[in-house]
Length: 69
Ligand SMILES: [Zn+2]
Image (cartoon, rainbow, N blue to C red; front, side):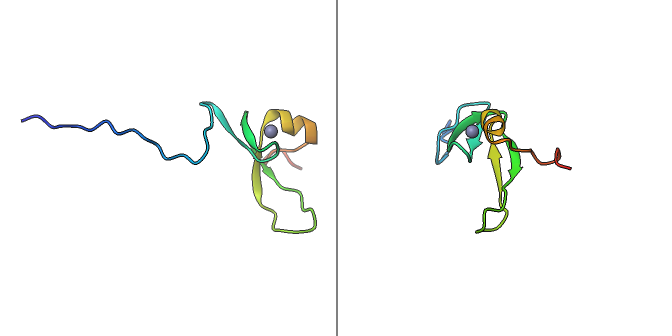
């Protein structure tokens, strides 16, 4: 008896992010070396966590979680 395997590999991802990349919350696009950033309180909303790519971290001087003092 042979099992019939269906190769239905259709990941339902809402946004297309290239392999090795992640979604950057700062430039609203896929970026590399995503790190979790504690969003700075800007007067409104809870201190949610967002991910920033290396480029945005340098641009906005963001400090990843775990590297803050
Ligand atoms: Zn970015």
